[in-house]
Length: 514
Image (cartoon, rainbow, N blue to C red; front, side, top):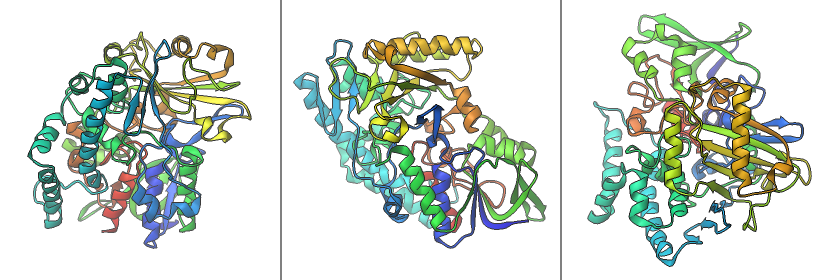
């Protein structure tokens, strides 16, 4: 039986980040991936002959610290700032464009308000940024370093000044709808700015939960919340992480799904000692690290029978039903959006926050939105390898598509909804239908089945106040450890959460090494 210091389940970007840090300390590391490609939801795959795409069509706010620590520039990754402008599409072509700290296409009053809004929210994002790459302290019985971590956040809040500290505490759980209405008048601008606090979550503008926190999380990458693409697109990042890991001796096996985590029942309690893959082979290791979602890790790979019942029930209660579908279009040319000179940004299709709210309401009753809202990117403009010469890929995140449908997801239902989405895009790009070579719609159920993500949720669990920091995924597993000795978590279901940041993989590795 082969033996390693650490076996990592899943070759998503967090698993690869964790593997890099462990191997940098001379650990013998094996990464097991069930699919034929690495990257998880950031993997690049062919959906039509010659046309490739990733579910994650931008690189979010990948950590500059991780980029430096792992010398990813030596493996072909350039994180030279390449932010995508964020464009709120207008049916008459009067689009709203947010580019860095400026906004165009809105009245001067909204432009001035945006400067104030941008300055304040960026300051709050900078306040939280250092804590995304730290372990969230557990509840009770904290050690001195953990107490100091809390104290550091408190000190930073005090340094904001009394007025800004009060404002931070006021808005942190405020519905996005209320915050947008306080600052702005233009309906498309309000919809556009609220988008980054909503996409990938199970919230709408009026939801009184944590959309502001999610927005600040995404603003912590340095580009004021704008999405970025490294040179070579998302695949450039994944390839660099793989190259870096293999240069440090990490072994990566694809097409090797893990069937179960092997445990030993000793006098000191349960301990993870290895994994068994689908063909029956067992691999032993001192540490087992799972980058898959907590429900799959604990309830499927480990088994609820090996957990204390209250802990197992807390895992079952994690809210992890996805609400985002993915539309891919193979096009015979570059789509032309009316009134838009360039289509190389992040294009938001929603005329106002009410349309977003109505789409959310439809999803609550198990229905696809009657008036869909979506985010469109043309990734082949930034990575020509995704499509044949002169042709392109359109990638769209479609919000509020329910995991549990009132009607079954069958081919007829998917075809009807795909046509509705194309009709919506055609309102802004009239010639799009004549350009389509092929299409693909991935529902949350498809994402669950293809990528082994329970519920098809991007973040492996809702990004909400009761599922954040030391409560992510739940207490008893909030510091990347678990009730089973030798079993760790490093996926998006842990602090700080999803998106392509590398934070969970970074933090988990440091906990394992400590």
